[in-house]
Image (cartoon, rainbow, N blue to C red; front, side):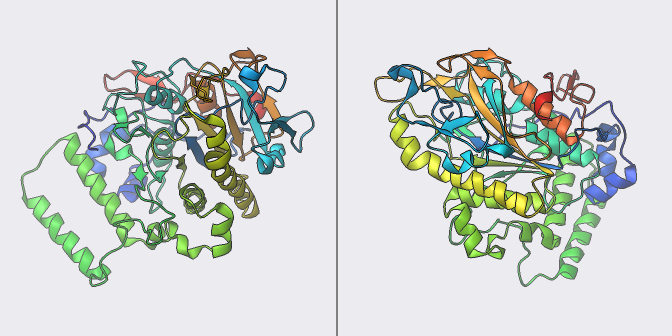
Length: 459
């Protein structure tokens, strides 16, 4: 789906500065001058006691998984609410999850389980927007697509901040694997792309199945017949043509220069192609993650943060696969939870074994939860009023539950938490002040990274 044209870039912040030399190194020089006026003020991370994270992996479960059937069991509720899954003890006294999560139950000491997350938009795309952007979309609808006036997502902003701090990896700082959030592959969820910050802050979207036998990231390698020297000669010729041609002084032209510079960096560097090359992993480790799309996407997420990428969205399901209006329990038990748990648990183990869990913040989330009352089709419907989100790694204090839902999991009973609070927590863990650093909307209004408050109990 082609995204709409974007308005003029209105990038800006109020905290710190990045050198012109650093920007030239980042962009390869081609577009630096054209973009410098928009990037002259840059947000630099200020080390704090909470600044443990370097990268973020967001495991996003499109469609809205049932909180009651996973992280927030209600065994004392009536049959119309509790469902068939029994609660089980975890390795932390007093914390239970359902029997669908035996591996993660043994890892609860690493997990901060937030049981009182809530917002008020029950349509998939609006719900996904609010849960990732941390702000409501202007209408509660599924029939929406990205625009140039959208707020940027959490991943967009993390990448934006990373670039301002001098990010110079051969891979863009924000990657989505395998496919972006959407409803029915027709309506692409807003808030995943550059939005008001411009197209050059869009993520790199894999748009391929990493579990496929012939998987490879497209367009990351030169043709075998084209040497680096020949490639650079061609770039030199292109530069001469550009310099002698008609000068176009516009944001769109500057962004195209930047895209070209980024593409050249990726194609001429082995770093990008190696980061996406799952054949470099042992077959045994790939088996542990699971030979399915979700498992291999999580493994790819680990490879990407290991290569320096700052934000990876590992999407569990193309379109709204967790939308269990019918047969919620059989679908969760047979096809949804097993690959999700296998991939999530293995990711945490793998990150820890490589010393990466200390600097990688992992967040498990979705659009919203599902209704406490089981419907006539043995399903659960949309329910943003209360749901669960899980965080781990990067100094997050695991082994605890924050927030409490009521006796049926319908509404927060204690310590309500908003998506904005979660985003503020992540920015804080990365070393950024979510209230004092701002970006500009398309109309020029300065907006803070998040209007929420960090969840201090888990930092």
